[in-house]
Image (tube, protein in one colour):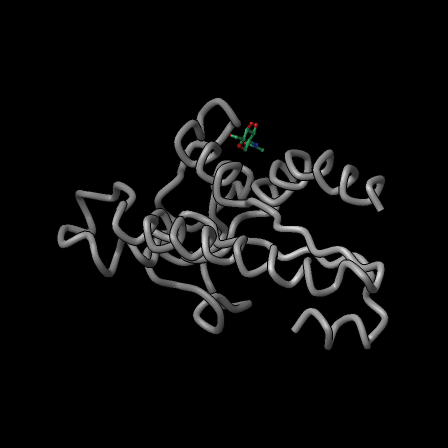
Length: 158
Ligand SMILES: *[C@@H]1O[C@H](CO)[C@@H](O)[C@H](O)[C@H]1NC(C)=O
């Protein structure tokens, strides 16, 4: 994959890891067992993401070694920890709702189920998630601010 991207002209490649998937509203709804009353993160799913991220980093290190002589760099970008911090401490970031999406009833809707006819909550900024899978614009912006110095350091190391 690294070499294919290099042939396309890429010289700085950043690969983001997985977020804490056990905290996605849709995962909580499907696997909580009591989706209306127990909307806590489900750790066993987030553990899968942690393991995936671990092997992803190893794989990216190997790719980096095979691309180094070509003057190319591959970076792993940790989104798990900043997203988890927002979820755990959502009130400190100004959010009111963390386990439901803003679109629809917030438990299941995503993709085509969120469409121009869907109900949308009055204040998107109060929600960590816009739909049952995707972060809201405010969450993305906080994430961007958390990642910006890291991305800048990638660029300046090149
Ligand atoms: C929307 O929610 C955020 C976070 O709770 C709050 O800071 C903001 O004042 C709200 N905006 C409106 C228009 O209610």
